[in-house]
Image (cartoon, rainbow, N blue to C red; front, side, top):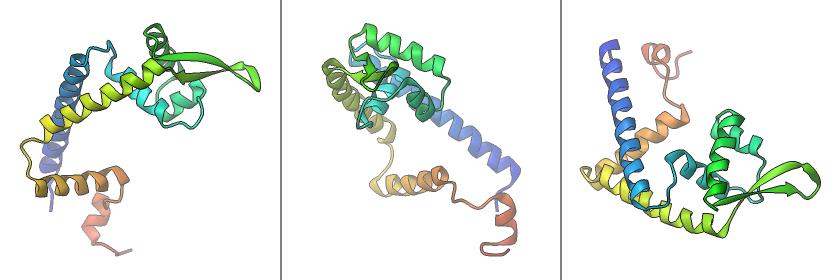
Length: 158
């Protein structure tokens, strides 16, 4: 059984790990020389998952940020030639965001940078530890873990 102190320690460890992951990813992104921030990298990856160019509001919703943040990211990426704004063919008042060829090439280099960062972060773990960590992270991200109340009364009790 966990205690509030052990839960606090776990939360602190997760926060420290998150900061470390961000720091390492940022360094690897900077080393690929694209002049892209981690937030812009995330926007490019998100754009690549759409079948057709999304609206900025769609991107804001998907990335869980305010629309103004998307405008700033798109401005920077557009200035760098990685995306372009295009009017929607069915409603010219709607602006869609498209990846350019340069943006697609940048994505390839960014994938390599992310892969290198992951290798650096996970280097200390064995294959078995990596599988265990993957399972634990899936559980945390899916939200399937029992709440403290559910743990206290046992699984399946209700």
